[in-house]
Image (cartoon, rainbow, N blue to C red):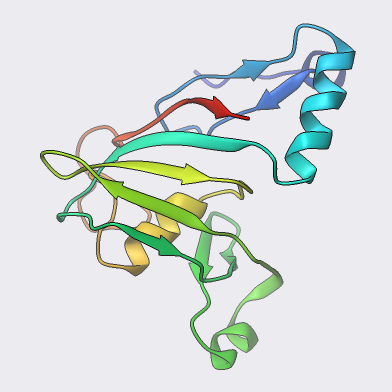
Length: 152
């Protein structure tokens, strides 16, 4: 089941994950906390931490390719100016830090979070997230991406 929120209920929602991503919804307790969080987020002073199990062995890297919409449900990594003309919308200049762990797991840290950023970036370096139906061939099982919190 998909959760539906009214504008009032979503007002203090700090972060919502993709429907097929395992993780948490984060809410602010008060409007003041909400506005302070959003201010810090806009200033890139908050890091969001994830863990992902990849199809291939991840390596320590910082991925800085811009991303933009390929279609309504998928983002694409922009590696050249030719790519910009193919897709729609504006480019999002984002960075994804990857720290390898055991058994193809990786710790992922992002400062700006754009829809499908981690999924598109990891796929672009041939380390897609396990069971990712949009960015990899394997469509069985649950997407192995977990949000674990924020670092200020």
